[in-house]
Image (tube, rainbow, N blue to C red; front, side, top):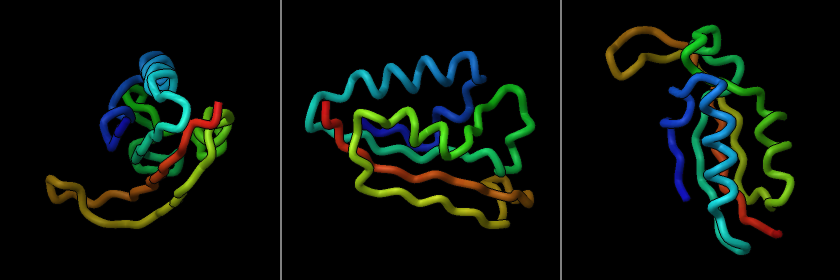
Length: 97
């Protein structure tokens, strides 16, 4: 299951149920890969988006073994050319139970 830079564009009331459905869909031994915006991203103040703190995502992965985790921050340009502070969470996790 792959969710890369799509789920953050959901409001929190939609993000958390969608994230849980993604995790629930992964069979034992299967993997989830995701790239999310973290809570220090420039979009974190936008109420129409969800930029969770890294600890909240880690907690949601309690039944998974995290195989890759990268918590990155950088100031760069958006796809439209505007300046932006990016805080991204990259993960790959394997379902244990």
